[in-house]
Amino acid sequence: MLLEYIKSLRDSPKGYRLATTFFFFVSGFGYSSWASRIPAIKTQLHLTEAEFGAILFAFPIGLMLTMPFTGRMLNLFSSRYCMLIGAILFNVVLALPGFAAYVWQLVIILLIFGGSRNVMNLSMNAHSLEVQRLYSKSIITTFHAIWSLAGFAGAGLGYVMVTQNIDPSQHLLGVSVAMLAVTACFYPMTLVCEPSREKRKFFSIPDKDLVKFAIICFVSMACENTMYDWSGIYFQNVLHAPQKMTTAAFVFFMTAVTLGRFCGDHIVMRYGVKKMLFYSAVMISVGFLICFLLPFIVSTILGFVLIGVGVSCTVPLVFSIAGKSKGLSSGSALTSISTIGYLGFLIVPPMVGFISEALSMKWAFLVMALLGGLMIFMVNKISEEN
Image: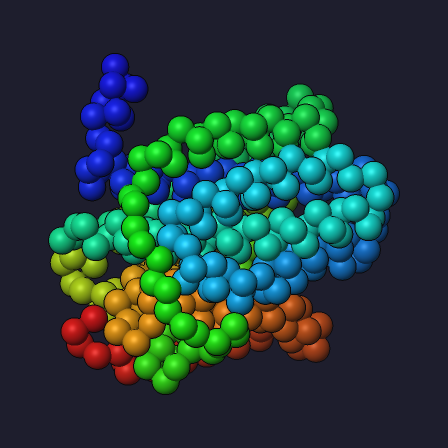
């Protein structure tokens, strides 16, 4: 019955939307599955925290190194084809970390893994913009909501695998095969679209019309990754909260992100993209400010929820605006903005660590609140038509 319904959706906007949704699911489920087995792989290779932290840096290096190549791919080939290549490479490499017997093997795997994730993420975002053009209403944030939901599902399966003492190699291989099967099932339903064939430099930064969006993306990604890396430690070091509350804090944040993305399209249709981005920036800034001024468990959880809602829709909405650029194709615009955005994702969280060491984590969160203020300033520069 379900298969017949899915088949009936082929060559329709709903079918294209469903197929693209599953690619977002594959990305979120695969990435969280890998993340859930990081402690086991660290133990398997007998590494210290510092050693393993240095090795993990191979992932973002691979991501950044492939950014120009991805932009070129999206100009030469359709986003549909690039999405397929990215998904296949991503899921094949996903199966490998559990089999790494030496550090150098894991470093190479993570370099390729980061690169494959970049190809898949940028191409599926570019493809989602192609599908968005078929709809008069906003559907873009729902794709990202599915990514978050898949992340929860992947983390849940990872928890079961850990409690049942399933080896990371078997777990990740199983996920890899399953996600490759999902890719094969839904790729034929994706929207057929033409590449832009746009002539562009191998490496480019955003032009003056897109730089404000790049900065907004930078701030949002910086704040989001700061929460991934430091929310639990904030509860431990500043609030001296029990371990179960430390875990719950991150769950509150992720739940707020997921719910914000599911509600985002409805809110955008009612109030517009600019107002949505403005209030998102306000919530980010106020959330970090609450954590700084009121360092108590209940108030900090409220701050985390505000930050989660604030970052939830910012990047997909910025991508949707950038995709309408008249001077660049959607692939080129996304690549240019992502280049700056990912710098925030990579550079700012370590800076939080340095500020925390020099002053305290409370002051680091105040700096993040000021970054939110920068985002408010940049959103006010966006034209009203957006």
